Length: 500
Image 1 (tube, rainbow, N blue to C red):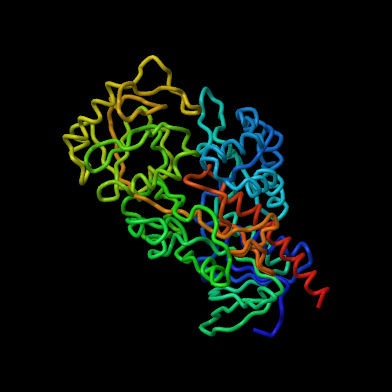
Image 2: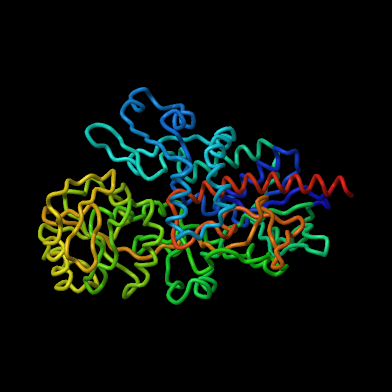
């Protein structure tokens, strides 16, 4: 490396980091992006997502503007609905138990749609999320859950498009670049210490953006902050998100903020790989639980599978699975809903049993009290309200009556063979605790003052999500705050250079 001083160094290699780099570059800044992973594993957690993004939109016109390749037939057969800013605010407040930071939430919601349009201008292609956020009823797709749009090619497609544009726009990118520390003085942050090709060196910059993820891949930190048992969780995404960016920021006095004992965690294939594997990770998801029941090793239900649509519950139910004996559970379905199960249930990467009778099914379910499980199923079946129609697109009110633990919606009796059951454990996606930033994405210190030259984006921004997460908000947040941090860092660098 030369002794060059960059305007902005971005630490990280996923969606938030790339958006930050592109945004800074738009302002004319010279930008170096440092990705800890090798080229083949670049992209952070973003590459392991399905590319779904939550956004404010006001009808079909807004969706079509993002996905202009839609055919007239697809448009005619789709009810996209709407999702207002008030809807987004209400979901954020409800899901986070009114703890989301109001200023940061305002930035997220108000900039969501414009940021997706900006992604499109930067080479990202979108399509409606048919099948995963819309079920076909009477020949027409009805979208639900506030997230109608997904990137072409999912997370890998998003990452590939952003890297291609970053290279085209002149962002310098280094892989296998492990940033170990910040260069810091009374004047603020002026660079990073990084190990490149086995050599540790100092890289200078007028501003640094930390966008290198949370600590979900750090077993020791998970146990320290999330609590007992979290060392046993599977990691859904990259193995490189070990909290390095958080640690180096905290060392210079950055203020920790948000829900440090909280995380996004879901039901996950019981025998999945310990960390994300781009070839197979997408096949480990088990998110169709709303249409069946979930039992633990004792054969007991332990959560309301129909409390809300999947987008508003899946990110908190992984914790519930981890709390069960042995840290596993089984999802049970009958043939009435098998066609509604997501595609990953039909791959070879599943721990699955199938039977023509319930007695045979529970006997095949490994490590489960078969007698107690059969009793649970029979009690559940007897409690299902039969005079309410089933509708997979809305909270249909088809519930159980009289059970200590209800199923509030989509309660169908398990009575039609063949029956199927799938073994799951907990998969952690990302951690909620991060750094406090101001409305310019500048990191604040523990005295509530901005740290000169230091900005943050993505999972590193604390205070947005608590307890749970409205599905598809993560990529949107990464885009919004990535774009903001890059713009702010470039403005700071420009002002610093002018003052020199």
